[in-house]
Every structure is written in structure tokens, then in C-alpha cells.
Length: 471
Image (cartoon, rainbow, N blue to C red; front, side, top):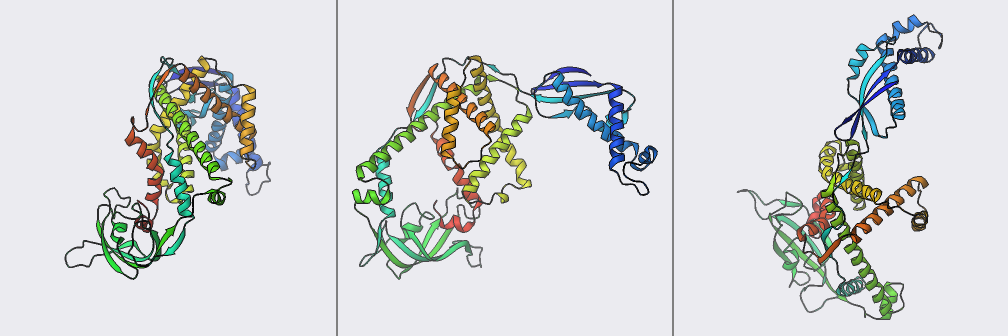
């Protein structure tokens, strides 16, 4: 079989394949035999249908099409093996199948062209001696106090309030109903969809509900009803409510205050596995310090990865891009499902096209980062020792004893991740990373990243949750 290669853009190889006439005839005859064994024709037993009857009933075009399809698939696979081409994904014909079918003669050689995606060639700029900046996440001991305060609040006893009105920090049992503040002339303001509730318990905290709702309750006494004016934020997740003024009629039914438990060893034993408050504090401190160290390391990795994207020259094949988009969308689906969102309502046929297009830039950037790291590891002869790999695999199996892992895929995944981390560490050691205060580089982007998942959840929830939930 004669095969001619041609290098194409976007990491593709063009192949012109010439199949000898005897192979064409053999493929055609095999199809006739196959149909003769399988087809049901009245008056004939299976396997006993005369050739001429088979051709008349099925038509030569159908038989040729089947033979041609088999021949193309078989020949292309053998051509890839013959030329030692590591193709990615499936092939694409460069000549229309109908055109090949019109010319196909089982007595003559078959010549056709196809193209396949292959692993891209990578060229790297100067990757040693990188001068970068990254944000340093520092431990703040106030974090421990905040956690302990939350533990105390969660364990607080609720004591009925007597002789004073509502104030911040109280727990209130209320009935409420909301309506829009404005309406067309001559019409009654409409009720807010989902903006009603009875016997609803809420903590009087400034970050609860729509801005103005909690503030309007301060000073109320049990049994009192009050109308409170609020303004939905312009950036509110529901377009129907965003920027709209509204009025809530609120009836305060019960009022209680929190009686916090003492912050002592007994409290530590109640909320944790530790015997003393000092041990609990030390554990929280260690956890937060580790979290901040990990965050700083992640910031360094992001800085290095972003630099590598600027240094790499590569044409990424569409097969790789499509697979990476699939991965990103699967990750998003898992995340949204964890928020309790029905992903079937989001991942519809109508939405998939725009969602894939939005994910494309991130997919390409991730691929460039990974390809750059793989190329540097190869150039610098970086590798993972068998003992390292075995230890990490054992660690994962211990963490997930009931995990149903494919041993081969687990080994490959762990080896790839370890090599990536080793390469990032090597680049960090060969360069300089200046650590800056947290938020000094991209404060707006950092805030956006933290709220992305929450925004996705809000967008998919009902108006009722948006009205009564935290903003």
C-alpha cells in the first residue's frame, strides 16, 4: 500500500493512500458474502441467495458504499501503523465520500486522501530565569477567632427577649410579603414572585436578605407589623428584580437572643475531638497556615503557567481542544450538581453550543500550559521515580478506599500530575518570584473568581430563593 504524507496546519498530517486493486476487489467480495449470509430474501434460505438476486435486491450502490467504507477504515488504520503516525482522534476525509463512491471500481486501485490530528510540535522561548510576581497569602490569627465565634453562635441557646425591641444579633420569627413599589398608573403594585413567607426564622444580621430588609426590622417589638422599603441591587441575579424598589410588609411574631456558651475546655470538647481549647486553637491555626501556604503556592504556579503561555509556540489540533472543553464542562456540571442544581436544565442542546464556545479560551490556555510543562520536562530530562509514583498512588487509595479506580489510568494520571509539579518547582528554582501583598495584583479578578460558582448557583435557582437568601 502506497502512502504519501503531507504536513498540514493545526497539527494535522495529510495522507494520500493508494489501495491496490486486489484489496479493493477483496473488500467488495467480502461485503457480498456478508450480505448473502445475513440478508432475508423471501424464497431463499440465508446464505443461499444467488449473487445476481442479491445485487438486484440490494443494489450495487449499497454494496459498493459498504465495501468502500470498510476499505477506507481498514486502509487508514494500516497506513497509520505503516507510517508510525500517532493519530489523535478520528480521521477526516479530504475527498467527499459521495465523490469516492461515484468513482469506486472494485477492479481498480482506490486512491483517497484523509487527514488526522497528531500531537503538536512545541517550541519554547527562554523559560529559565523567569522574573515573575505573585500574591502571598498570609495567615491572620483573626481567622481562628472568627471560627470560634461561629462555633459559639451555632451552639448558642435562644432565650426569649423581654422588655426591649429587636436589635442586630437577635433571632426573629416573622411573616412577610413583598410587592413592587411602583406600578403603571391606575394599577395595584404586583406581588414579588416568591417574596412571601410565614413563620420564617431569620437572624438579624446585616448581610441577610435584600439590603434594607434587616435594617428596617431594627426597633420592632413582638406583635408589631411594619412596612419596610428596600431597593434591589442593580447587579441582582434576577433581571426581573434588579434595580427595582420594593416594599415588604413584616410582622414580628417572636424575638429571641443568643446566649453564647463559655469559650473553655468544655466547649472545645463539645465542638471538636480535642480535650482543651488550646489544642483546638492550635489545630485551627495549623489548618489556616497550611491553607495560606497552599494558596501562595497556587499563586506562584499561576504566575509561572501564565508566563509559559506567552513563551510557547504551538498549533493545537481541534481534537485536543474539544476534549479539553469536554473536561471543563464535566467539571462545571459536577460543581453545579454539588450546589443542588438540576444540570439537565442548564446542559440542554440549545445551551451546549454557547457553553462550549465560552469554554474554548480557557481550554486553549490550559492546553498551552500543559504542553509547555511537558516539553520543558522532556528538554530538561525531568522524570518521576517509580518509588514516588507508588507512594502517591498508595496515598490516593488510602484516602479513597472504596474508590473504583482503573489501575492503569490512575498510574498515568498520578505520574502526569507529579511530573507537572516537579517541572513547576524546577522553573521556580530557576527563576525569581517576587511575593506581593494579597490582592495587590488582581483584586477585581480575585473577587470575581470567588463568586463565580455562587453566581452560577444563583442564576439557576428560583426567584423565591433569590428574594429571601443572602446577597
